[in-house]
Image 1 (cartoon, rainbow over the protein chains, first blue to last red):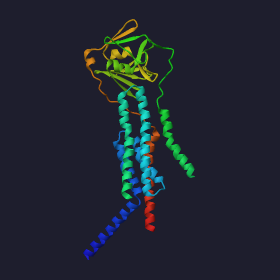
Image 2 (cartoon, rainbow over the protein chains, first blue to last red):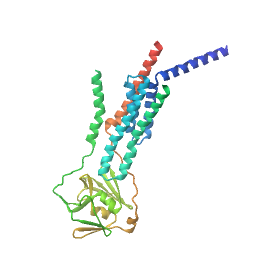
Image 3 (tube, one colour):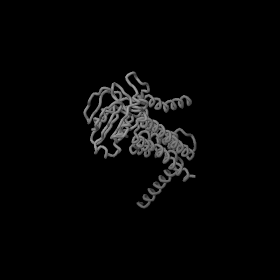
Length: 140
Length: 205
């Protein structure tokens, strides 16, 4: 009787595991959005020195995925593209904000510091794009 | 309805740029006021060598003003710029002087003082009074006819320019500061709602 119960538990666990794997495979886009919002965005927000500016990138990419009506795999590519683009836009905007006044004040140190900080958004965007492309490639 | 929603989102995204534009300090007064004159022929000599600035020195209320970069290059002083509070700090050795742009307040070695004419921005250069800066940094100043002699002490000459704590306290526009966490939260709710919908669909099928 005990053995029977154990076997039934194992079957039920396997079914749950297979259900979860099916869901991950079928809706990888939602999983990646969850990853971007729950892991990447807080990580970037608390680790990056440009804080909220670099965090725009994962949040923006997640939103692109949320409003997109493509199939999951295409959605990943779109999100990657949006992350890259947003990263570049945020970096250039930040550079314009920091580098302009820094050059006007002839503060070379601030120019260097500004570049090193504002580049974080581009790096975040490119990293997200690489991860999403890799996941998408793995699924095809 | 959809179009209105997207126009709203677009406007929401564009708003930070408008805010940022408004918050960018526009202190660069490019117009010479009546109290400022250009002293083209004034020679500035630091330790026996004439030092030339790309912007000619200005005279305001009888004080000779030079770009802050000139001070850092000629006297080997360290200059930091605080964008948020619009403060220029010039340090040399253990001494420092802080100018508050367009304010008569000066902080000399952590002590507040009032000065005759404030530091200002001219042609995108921060102009500081040369004599006051040099004297407060421990250099000697001698005024001759059409010349200013600045003498640096030996330990000042030996001092190398070291990078100091650069202030980058740029205030973020509130729409960015609070908008991004808000978008993150709404996105998370939207995601959980989508996942719940998916789960219901799977359950029913």
